[in-house]
Image (cartoon, rainbow, N blue to C red; front, side):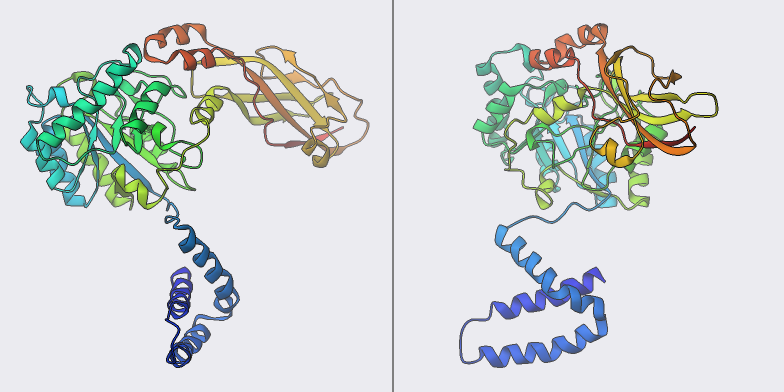
Length: 439
């Protein structure tokens, strides 16, 4: 029915664009004579929605907006420039009709196990995107702004020398990033940059899961990797769980290295890669390159503070609320949700006689106040006396307890600003409301 609605709207839009002339009225009449039977065929619901949908489409066309993000969109990326990109990965991708971005480290081109420039150009000629992965793959957190710029433009110059189009996407070496790099990329005309999984998720050599890319929150210069895949991160359960999140506007960005790679810790076997790609094909995922994101989002649109959404995810949140009300007094429990090593330092429980009160953060039966404790189970009710059987409602919020050992572990691979934010105590939003029968 959606397709039919669109057909009706397009006809109307086409009619509206006919030039003013003596033939315009006649043309419109001919269109309407065709349109009316079509509308009747599509049904009453279509008639109701025609004018509304037409106005929405007209506004979108006027605003030059992009297509909304469908479910099951996967962005496929490969790092470093292994020769297996061309000999192994590309044929499999072409066989499935998949797009991909190959991030090349220009200073490694031609080295053992790596692509040479003719092979990089061949990947580009086959229709794959060539992205910038720096000139020498340094930890760019520990080099000067001038050196950051040199890492970017040296790659651009090498590509130009070998007839490869200027890249518009960058992958931070090691996934390490800061505001200086973002500034340099913008100055050199880049549109997007892909990071890895940190700081929301811990950074390990083995790879593993990370955050999904939500274009409504994540700036195009801080696109996260949802999964760093390889022989050391082969879990099908993790892989499929991450892919299941590619819906409701979120996009799954996958990071591979060589298939296989010259380095053991980031290598992917041909069997694992083949199985992964077949899974994407069998389950109807749309697999694209980074540059293809422009079909769905405006990659030129920048957030006022591009790091704010990322840093806001560094806390914890309570979920899976439970209340045991079978005894003399209710007892409350919850689970802590976090993607990083950290715990709980405090909590606050609200219990109310109505959901309306809780919506206003009013615990008319009990407001525990902030309780400094890491306890999250079997917390006894300590509010007003419950004298009759009735349905009551509660929710909880928590304060995190940063893991100093983890912060120290990642200190060399995280920007100073991010390390400081990791060490801050943050209070979560209140949980969803849960109910129980009190007496």
